[in-house]
Image (cartoon, rainbow, N blue to C red; front, top):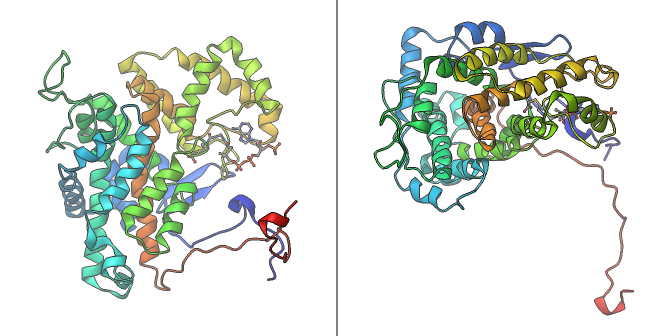
Length: 412
Ligand code: CMC
């Protein structure tokens, strides 16, 4: 009643008031809680940025060490989870495993489930209930802490390798790299039996994690809130976020960029590829954004990180094709007139590839840091003084008006 036009794709619908992330898409500005992304990428660390996104202020020294130890303490996972991962087919996409794994994880924590504990389990934290707030934060530590563990399990199962228990005494990103590549005693691989993350690569991954930690109401964060608004446990909401992020228009774009560059093959084939894009036979993955109508500010930072990584790993020949494509598209009227510029995913896949990650693992490398943004938005919504309202949009019905049922034998 009263609805005339559907806002397809939510082009002009604000679903929430938020104080977490600010984007000015016309001027290429991105800030977390008011801090420019450039400053955070240059001077902060992933867990410090995580604290900032979740709690709204940069932590003191003791707040940061408490947060860090809580997150890392929650890294290990019940050994039964091994059976869960081993139930997947040998070639299952790691995103399929990770999406299901978050949902599976939720089944361990009845204390986080409003269906079991009462609908106000988390929302009463907004009224100052300290136990509810502690419970909420415990789930947040769990999800961030276990994100790397689940991701590493999805990675290693594909290689037929044993799982590695999260180490102690390492940063979040170092611990992740360790869990991915540490050689366990049963690995039938040559090489040293203990793995030490390369400091340049660990730092590069930490910066990439900062850049990917949040991006206001992107498709997956919206999905987490939409799902969270009916008050399931937060693990289920995060699992829904994973499913949304998996798509090639969102977090799957970094994988799609590499597949696209491989299919183009070399710089000489770039013009023909761009012609196919203009005829809408192909998509230029890693270009375009709903909010940015100029270059994504994260893409400049990533470009610099890429050079630092290539200095260690060697230069990826695909970079020549990427640069030729990038330069040609930015000069082409089709892309200029539509304000299409490189987004965060254009370069990130090249870095992940240089670091030796398989292509289908790239979206997982996006999920791990984005868990922080998801839980920050979820917490903000649960703590809303006006309470949580279920996200139930309307539609414009365009189907038939009333019709009488026709029995099967009378249908023509
Ligand atoms: N290649 C070719 N044409 C494009 C592209 C592209 N990558 N992106 C947009 N366009 C065209 C689109 O066809 C439309 O043309 P027209 O007005 O003639 O119909 C015009 O540009 C406006 O685009 P839109 O589809 O209305 O934009 P949107 O806001 O609905 O979609 C997007 C945004 C990111 C889904 C889209 O730009 C896209 O598909 N990009 C490629 C996938 C990608 O790189 N995704 C990662 C996004 S950034 C990180 C993240 O969110 O995960």
